[in-house]
Amino acid sequence: IIGRLECGRTQLEVSEKLGIAQSVISRLWQRFQDDGNVSRCYSTGRPRVTTANEDRYLAVTTKRNRRSTASDLSHQLSSATGTTVSRQTVYRRLGHIGLYARRPVRCVPLTATHCRLRLAWSREHALWTPQQWSCVMFSDESMFSLQSDSRRTFIWKAPGTRYHQENTIERHRYGGAGWLVWGGIILGSRTDLHVQSVTMTGHIYRDVILEQHVRLFRGAMGAEFLFMDDNARPHRANIVDECLQLEDITRMDWPAYSLDLNPIDPAKKNLQKICRKSLFLKIS
Image (tube, rainbow, N blue to C red; front, side, top):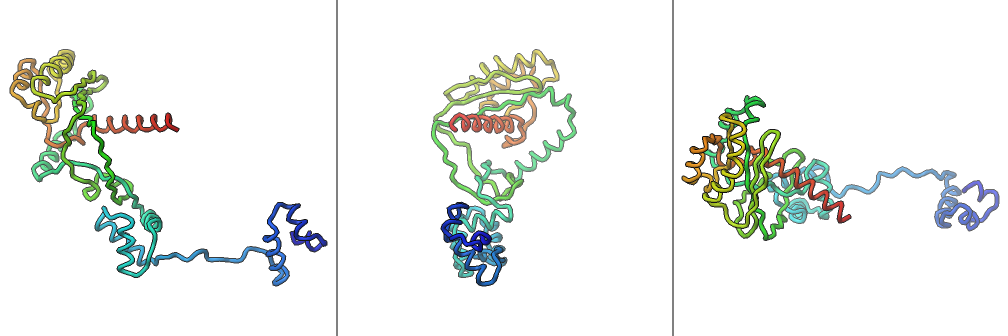
C-alpha cells in the first residue's frame, strides 16, 4: 500500500485495486507520515471488568449456593464490591474454573439406614466373579408419565461431580397417568418388554411377570438362577412370595432405594442418549 502511494497512486486507486476501504488506507498513510511505521501497535486489549479477588468471590458464592442464577450472582457481586457485571460475564468467569449450569441429579431421600445397607451390599458383592453375576437377572419397571416435567432448575457444577451430594436434588417418585414398562436383563439375554397402562399389582406381577417371563429363565438356568427386583410393594405381596417358593426361584437380597446399583439404569440412560441424538439428526 505504502509503495503504491509513494509511486504517485491516489488512495482511491489503491483502494479499488486492492479491495481495501479507503479509510483504512488513509489511516495507514497518515501513520506512515507521522512516525514512518505501519505495524500494528501493541495493545493490552480490553481491560477485565473484574479483579482476581472478585473472581474468587464469585466462585466461593456459587459453591455455597449452587442454585443461584447468574443474575443473582451478578447482584450479589455488585452489592459486595460495587462492580456491575453482565450474566454472560458471570458465565465466563465460572466457566474458567470449570463450573457450568447443569440440571441436578434427582434422587430419593436416603436415611442413614439406607446408606448403611447399600454399603454393606456393595462390599458383600464386590468380589463376585463374572460367573456369579451371569446367573443374576436384573429387572426394573419405569412409569412414563403423560404429563410434562420441565426440570428447569439448574445448578453450577464441575465436570465429573454429577453424583456429588451438593449436585443432587431430592424428588419422590411421581405418580400420575402414564404407561408402565417392565423388563429384565441377564448376561447374554433379556426378556421381552411388558407394557401396561394400569398400576402394577401383586396379581399382575405374579401372573404376567413371574409366570410368563422369569419362570422361563429359571427353568433354563437351573438352581443357580437369582432374580433381582427393587422391593416395590407389589413385588413383596404374599401371592408373589408363594409363587417364587413354588417355582423354586431365589430372590436376590436388594437394598431399598438402590436404583443406581442396577445395571439396567445406565443402559436406559445410554438408550435415551441414542434416541435424543437420532431425533436431533432427523429434525436437523
